[in-house]
Length: 481
Image (cartoon, rainbow, N blue to C red; front, top):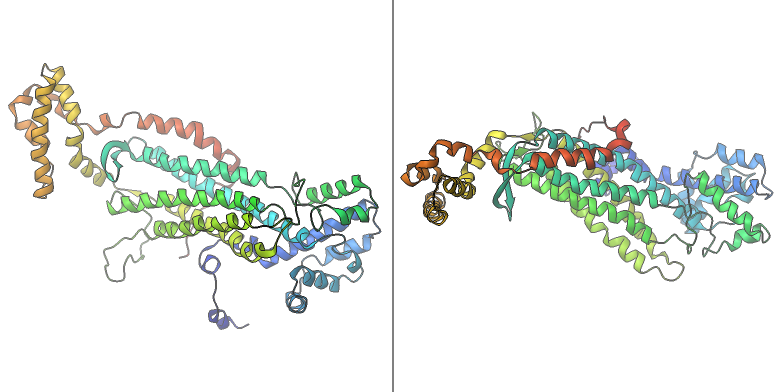
């Protein structure tokens, strides 16, 4: 096909525009069908070892043709047979004439189909987990660097008590740490479907081994180990339970919700000009407004995270309608929903790593916002200082209430700056505390134990999570788009 013809048909942006090469390959036809052939080889080797009349010549022939797949022939066979597995059995048999009689011996289509899916899910998690670890590492460094920098906290997106920039990043980290544990658990809980036959009873293999149950169990165990799994599901229908897919995609969708929250926060802070995502020298923020620095990376994460969250409904519904030992209405849906879940998760983690490696903080803007709001937040401190100086709490409270309302009117009705502090300084009533008013209004006295919480959280909960991924921590992300 000519290169220009590629632009005459739909191409998924998940692959053509965003996804990493390793994740795109993980769900590729090349990976899928070479894995099928590996599984046929594992099955033949195990059957031979357990006494079936399979020769070394047949095994060697299959191994020598593991990767040279004639995709055109397979496509033609599938057009004739209307069966993808049998099309590839015929294609493999064509280049392995000696092994042809024993390829797929005793197996059902789900032997290659489901077991390959489980391998792809496992390998997909193995791609995602180091990427998530790197995001957590970059954010942990950011939190540590800004653990002591006071900033306005917000509840209801209204100014609330102060926190620190690092403490806020720890809120993001806590969610991602939960995601790390969820992904690791989902990955570690995966088992192999193994060698189970058409309805999961292993009847065909029991027949092959003339009623020897131990050999059927050995066959299941040997093939499972060859595929790199510690365990196989003890019971299956024709397929492994589709709740396994729910478990996997659920962990990814939950991570999507975390990323959406983080990137929404970054977008809100970008509007306040307190924090910006990386912005490259020649990058254009708007075609019409040259001054703009739009948070396009964070917006991309939010956009794709919504898709990832929405994908969870597919495996949930699929699992709910698998009649008895299985129906085929899972197949077309899973061809789309499973790869897209991992591809989308891959993209948002790569993009978020790029963001967290280049987050820019503007302390002077943050300080200005604090100055604007702090006088209102400091009223309780002012009252307490006056009481310590011998004042009456109720009298002081009323004085502060009146001055606060006057200052609020200047801010809201006149668009002026918050002048509560100036009003306090002019009022003779507050003369006893004017000498140490600056210390009463020091932002660092309003952040509580935020810095200490950051230090403890990073050392006790975050850094230990990253230990298994130390060797993969130095990879940097450069976004092509």
